[in-house]
Length: 145
Image (tube, rainbow, N blue to C red; front, side, top):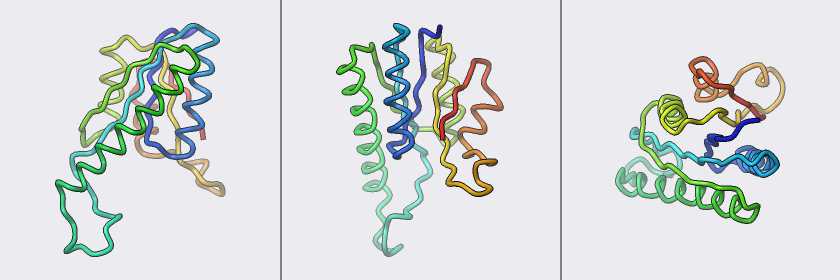
């Protein structure tokens, strides 16, 4: 049984489903969970309607706020289930690197991560972060789609 689970989250629907399943497993097995949200220091203003309206500092603040909200949801769900949980919010241009670094530093023995495929040929392709975690991890990785 795994005892220290790392749970990367981005607030997406699939990530939210994975959170519920991961926390249920953690409760059954007596594991603790570390929720992690990684912010890229290179922001893309895709949500902005006009490039001239782009404000990098405001966008970075909004990203960090969304990250904290994602992690707060993990903490709340863990609290409801009685699962020990802590969180990490990091900035890194290579999220897979940050995920693996935290997993190793905190002694995690499992990484539960979502991938964002949408049917067709896409199930054969994993998201780049998930793929890089799988390719580089020295500990088991559970992938959910």
